[in-house]
Length: 258
Image (cartoon, rainbow, N blue to C red; front, side, top):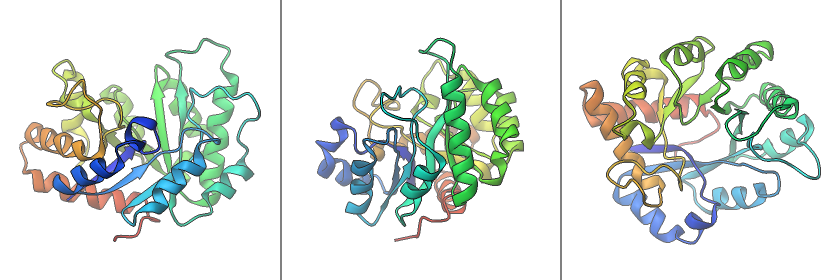
């Protein structure tokens, strides 16, 4: 019924609880999940998790916050990692100016590398942007990210940024943040995104939605995100579940139904 389009099942908190995590997914009718790569070093673990169950897939990429001591990912390296049936996306990638000071030319170049790899392997991008929406959109345009397509994950930006992302052909994914009482602006975004361009996610183990805020997040909780958005938009939960599931398979074409 629901798909968690972005989680981190290789992270220690979730990894230690896999059996309980998968049981809760089943209990809450969360049928599938996409577990996301954040470093080159951890990618083998991400892939192993995806390979462990038929209802899991993964991405290949390096998070913009990760500062690397040995080497930056190359287009060729990302293409090699993406050449696997379980890898259905490139990322997460993007720009994050929240924690790190300029100069961040290395971060912008890393983002461009991911876009180029996604265009070549024809797999969609999973894009993270924080305090960097203008540059994120600029590089998406300059590098023709539309050719690859993708999703603006854990979206927390304005309606204008949402519209610009939609104009580039990207999907908008909402996390548990949309359920927070303080997220009034984001709730307006949730109401304006076309139903055929909407995804839902947990970004677990972070950002647990109401009513589990403050606890470890997990893919089974994506149901609460779907239910909240349904209430916001004045539609049935089934409408949101069916739409976001169809959108997931349309975007991540390599994810075969199981």
